[in-house]
Length: 197
Ligand SMILES: Nc1nc2c(ncn2[C@@H]2O[C@H](COP(=O)(O)OP(=O)(O)O)[C@@H](O)[C@H]2O)c(=O)[nH]1
Ligand SMILES: [Mg+2]
Image 1: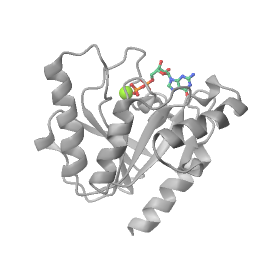
Image 2 (image 1 turned 180 degrees about the vertical axis):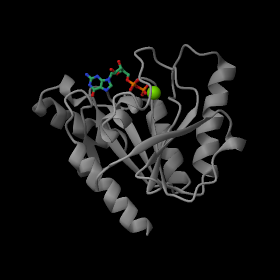
Image 3 (image 1 turned 30 degrees about the horizontal axis):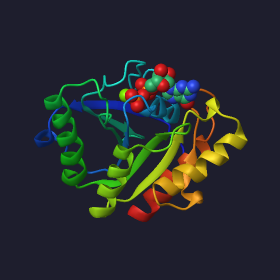
Image 4 (image 1 turned 120 degrees about the vertical axis):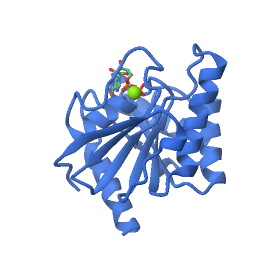
């Protein structure tokens, strides 16, 4: 799989406005600041595609990115678990994430991003439990792998996998900064699209 083209389509602020797509969707989920927007920019090879921010919690929307003129849609989900937002805003975000996950008719997989340095949080675990409960297929991707040595990454793999009740081989590794792990992600997307066909 090769990504030749990416186009920002639209932002959506409430779940009654989620797009009725004809193409398969892969949602990018994870805590605020885990590197979701950077991941999209890295995978589509355009550093300005999804907005990235060092201020957590800036993305309060579903952002849709169309890949290869209708082959696939990436949906950048709002980050969860940012403690500094007010309770009502937080509820709204969770509604938006939940509303999207259950409301999208074209969702084929969720890419759940976790920071390679940290043990998954209660919210990460909740997210995994939620996807299990609703039979939503997902892929766990550890981000910011440039921050640790290879050996430390392998150690973290064990910690992340066991916290999320997954096998070690189910965790993928990327660094948007060093641009590593892209081939594996593209292969994964290709595999998902093949299953979907
Ligand atoms: N070192 C390093 N920093 C990263 C990487 N990916 C993202 N970041 C940084 O993490 C912060 C949050 O990234 P962003 O993509 O906005 O996260 P989002 O809130 O999940 O969309 C930014 O300061 C990024 O520069 C990475 O692979 N390596
Ligand atoms: Mg973002």
